[in-house]
Amino acid sequence: MEPPSKSEYNTRIREIPSSERPRERLRDLGAQALSSAELIAIILRTGSAEQNVISLAQSLLSRHGGLGGLARLSFAELKREKGLGEAKASELQALFQLALRLNALQPQDRPTVRSPADVNALVGAEMALLDQEHLRVILVSTRNQVLAISEVYKGNVSQALARPAELLREAVRHNAPSMILVHNHPSGDPSPSPDDVGLTKVVIEAGKLLDIEVMDHIIIGDRRFVSLKQLGLAFSP
Image (cartoon, rainbow, N blue to C red; front, side):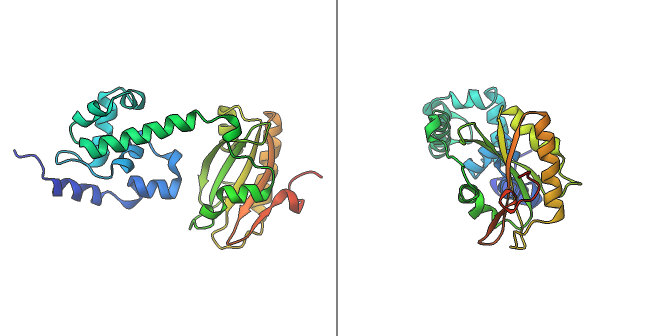
């Protein structure tokens, strides 16, 4: 039996529901929701005659014991991997080097958030374009430096659906003393809803039990944003 042709493998990847393709999943859920294989597949873009790009990424990780093992390969070793070649080996080496440089950033190189305007400058332009509500937490150090940004919910952001434990989990994992809630209103109107206020109150109280301060809740609209803290909603004076 002859192996599938390249066109047959390309057809298979196209036949994957769009919501399950790596690029679309990244667009809809955020990069943190993707597996290492999916992220590598986005970098590589195309597979080989024998494997689609997702299978290629999975096999590379499997053969080398995960992301760490793959990152330790030299350019020559990557180039010899079946399905890679010089261009893909270069792309992977560039990716791993950027990751090393990012990890080596000194604390003073991290962005800081000291006001709602800083939060909007950090994520507002991108979130204003999303066609569904996305709820994220910005984890902040004692010096107001951004430790991480995690997307924790997508859909109808409400007190009933978004659980405080999910919002606080990333802060606990990163040992972050403070966090900022931020979500978008696809309608373009950033005016807080009763659900927005109710959710914020619940998370503030849950955060107190874990000694995690909820600094603010920013709502991103079309060319505008609001701060629940500045509006005097949910936060004690």
